Image (cartoon, rainbow, N blue to C red):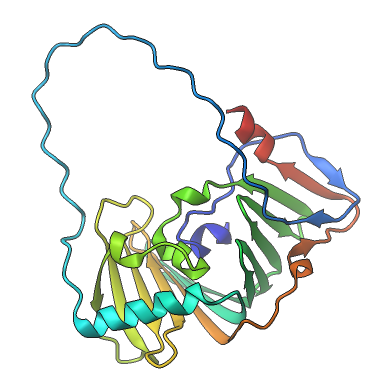
Amino acid sequence: MYLEKLLVTLLAAPVMATAPATVSHQVVAQAPAAQAPAPQAAPKAEAPKAAEAPKPAEAPKAAEKKMTPEVKDLVDRMQAFYEKTQDFSSDFKQDYKYKALRRTQTSTGKVIYKKPGLMRWEYEKPSKRTFVLAGEKVYAFDPEAQTLSVGRIDTSQLSASVTFLFGQGNLANEFSISKGECKDCKGTLLVLDPLKNEPRFRQVRLEVDPKTAQVLKSTVVDPDGSENAIAFLNLKTNVGVAADAFKLNPPEGTRIDDFTKTQQRK
């Protein structure tokens, strides 16, 4: 699904079969209220095991480098920009380069965001699709297939490469950040290498406007070398995006695959 690539492959809906349902009412994507964690059973006692030789500590994936004053200033201003952003709307152009297939797929559409934790990606080309992130739920609507999938994610496990867009997370705590060379960039290119082994992606590159400190383009390099680049066009912040903009209104007969029930039973 496209959503897996949009947010650093972290918002994938689970691939589990459940009994489909049909919808005849409006589905409202709202951030759920906070819930207390379920109590966990005490661990069972185990027989002592034979002593094993200690394993060497795993080396970080990238050596931490001290940011230059220029990079630190831009990173600080970029974090501050999104911390004070209550909502935004933008057109986007996505180019996904499949390394193995040696081809690029281009998609376009619109994205809107509203604190706390509401985001909607409206794909227009090459085919219409809608993805809504609402708190810990993800909604994926395919009008051609007439299906609506609902999944759950653990937002506490999201990387700072995603959460800083929500005004949360600290990039410097998770990445070694340096200035990259880019002749075609419209802004300053920041290269983010994860400090710890990261199975979800290899590298993140952010093209940042040096004046406004907003992200103009985000590129995520997958473990296999494929690249997912999203350029944000005509971005407008604090425009008063309404909560109703995150409601989904699937037509009669739409099949609903609700994976949250399966996840709760696990």
